[in-house]
Length: 117
Image (cartoon, rainbow, N blue to C red; front, side, top):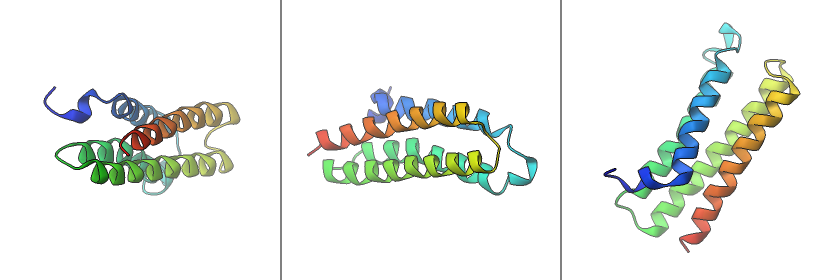
């Protein structure tokens, strides 16, 4: 492992979450491919990408800023989950499962961010 982010639990968690979101959205209606499907996938990917980008060759302050972006992207995923539930693409059980996974990831990112101060 050549890069710092590859050792971070939160980065690994975010990569796994992104894969789970991708699998989930395979079941969304085809007409949503450029709408909600794309939005939730991009937001989910953004979490891990911001962690990676901020961790390498940056100051703690800069890394903290990128972790803030990662948190915001995680919140965007939560918002997309609400939309998917409201539109009937996922049921309450699936919503709760993914909500809990993303919430846990966000809490861990915030803890890492606080540890940098």
